[in-house]
Length: 53
Image (cartoon, rainbow, N blue to C red):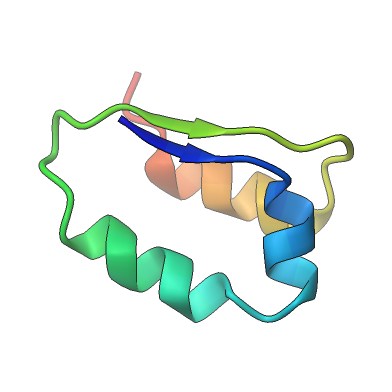
């Protein structure tokens, strides 16, 4: 399981590429939890790429 807490803050600080780099190495069945107080466009875009069902 990968948990991204305060995801909007990670994105605001410029870690988008690094998050995707880590995600590329995860097994396809790995559960990803993205926690965010708000849902800016970048966080919403990331959730749609990480969601499988």
